[in-house]
Image (cartoon, rainbow, N blue to C red):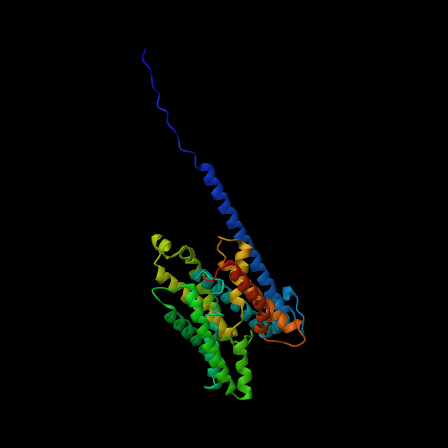
Length: 358
């Protein structure tokens, strides 16, 4: 009798259930990111409108919206909103967007929560050049903002060159940035000590930060730059995520590591330089916007746009507090500093406990 042997074929497990789970998780994560980002955008817009509502002349939300778009028929309301309050609100919104986005780019690029323009010399360089232009060169208005922009770029270039050693590491970059920052702050203090009373008072805003001091030209430059830079940043999101995996992995994925790192760093420096040229060095906004946005959207998600809206919300809320919630009006940077200082202390303690630091 012939024995018929049957070959037993072992089939590999069906990957479709696992694939559907991964797809579902990705969709849920993307949905959370979109929902949180839209909620932050709505909150920032509400603060933007609220900034123009409050004051000695009260205005309703609908009047603010109509006047902003040139649709308000009452001349008094249109004048108060467009000529008095709109520039301050637009300055706060644009400054916050730029600082929040620049901060999270620095932190993700250098893989360090302390990687912020506040600590790597960019803001201090802008302050030093602005103060020097006022006290030494007797410049005013747009020329002071231009000097601040140049100072931020010079400081960033100096830190990058000093920190370069066959590449850039977060720990070395931050330490050198702190040194450069202290150098520029000392220079600002010396220049300020040689100033007369009028110039000293004007220069102080460039050491603390205050919205509403920029002219129309500076605001146009900031918003046009944001309109150009924001799409560019989101086109580089995948490359930024690859760089976070390490240089070797990024190279294996086809990323030109140093070129892309330099491009992202220049983008962040440009954003913070333009924001500082409009409002001065707004303390801690760039530092805290990224971690807050990351916590809200969840780890592993793209929090770039969310961080920008968090930064805008912080600056707008701080300006409301500084102008209307305290016995005396204060520069906006004083309030952001009061908000950010406790966070910095907590961050240093938590980083020390976890053994992280870049």
